[in-house]
Structure formats: C-alpha cells, structure tokens
Figure: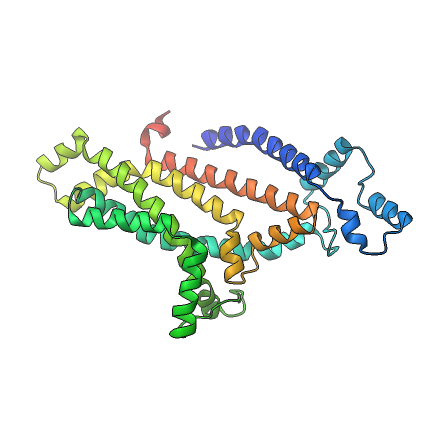
Length: 314
C-alpha cells in the first residue's frame, strides 16, 4: 500500500508544477498594475519604480517565477502588496475557518446524501425513490445564495434560533462557533448531499444486480446484511471519489456562502485579493487549494486500497 501511495504522490508532482506555471502566467495576463493601485493618487515615478524594485516586478518574468517557486518550497509565499503581511500567515489564519466549514458541510452531505441514495436504490420504482430523486434535484437546482438568505430570514430573523452571520473560532467558544457555522454548512451540505445521493444510488443499483448479491439473498441472509455488507461496501469506490473531490472544492472556498454569512474564509480572501490585484495572495491561495485537491486524491487512493482487496494484492 505504501509503495502504491508513493507512486501516486510522484505522479502528482508534475501536476503541481504545471499548476504553479499556469497560476503565475494567468496572474501576469490580468489587466492593471498592482503598483499603481498601491501608490494611490500620488503616483510619483520614482516611488513607482522603487515599489517595483521592492516586489521584483522589474525582473524578467521567468526570474520572478523562479524566485516565487524557491520561496514557496521554503514555506515563503511572499508578502501581500496591500497589507504587507506574509501570505503564509494570512493563509494560516483563514485555513482553519475554511476547513471547519468544509468538515461540517461534508457531515451534512454524508448524513443526508448517502443514506438517501441507499434507500432510493433499494426502493427503486417506489414512492420513496421518486421523493428522494425530487429532493436531490431540488438540492442541485436551488442556488446557495437564495437558500442562505431564506435561512437567515426564517431561522435568524423570525425564529431567532441561530446567529445570522459572523464567525467565532473554535478555540474561543466551541458551542458558539458551531452555532455560527450550522446554517452555512447546511447550505453547502444540501447541494453536496444531492450529488452524493445520485452517485450512491447509481452505484448501488449497479451492485445490487450482481450475482454475488443474488447469491447472498439466496443463502437466506437478512436484507440489511446483504445491502450494507455485500452491496454498499462494493459501491463505495465512486462515492469516495466524489466525496474527495467535493471536499477539495470546499477547501477552495465557497465564495457566495462566505459572503452571505460573513465568514472570513478562503473565498472572501481570494475575492478581495483579485479586486486589489494582490498577486501574491491569489497565487498562494490557488497553490494551497491545488495541494488540498492533491491531498484529497491521495486520501481517496488510500481508501480504494482499504476497500478493494484486489488492489492490495496487486
């Protein structure tokens, strides 16, 4: 298993290099000059030139890229042009917020989506199946920002059960932190639950038609044993793949949801950085996001090995 994961990790290195080149090149293609935005109204040529020297903007593009990569390998992603803070420090302050939101959203998604998919597959063609599919399509169709606003109006304004916005770190007040994250996590989790439900249902339908499932039923095993032990375990592979990719998307940041609920996560930070032409922050966030996707793919690969004995034998 270890050698398998090492091979997968080595394959990911060229992907990360290509992503870094793409992100760096894309930033250079954006219109506007960050130094002009930083200088404000007093755009003295000498000051502008000094700022460009300070941030190495007068160097050739290839040299800027190599300097950025060298710093990234040492854990230095540069400094924010707008705030002067190290990008690594800014990311470290926002990453726990985004991870908490992602974990809570995935809890909602798995608790709702996977059981609904299993039930829909087992009860195929019945009213339960139709209801589950309608709910799943609704979860995919309803915009997150609309659902978030409706929850704020009902749960926070009318019923006054949960705070409408804001964020409290877990280290300060765990209960209040969970309360502030419940609604945004539910908003994101419902959309993810719909995708998980559809994929779980499709995978389960394919497995339930297999010969070994019919054999298990013919042996007189209880239906829940056949479904959960024999069918669901073999249907998990595509579900694990999807869950890993969805979690990676959550780490990238849910911009609209974070804006609606005023959550200081990755999404809000990268939007502000794009508007301010803060190249170092955008590059750092995208690089960390790519690393998050690669890590989740490795987790999915490890889950494959654990779930599929044939991979362990190979």
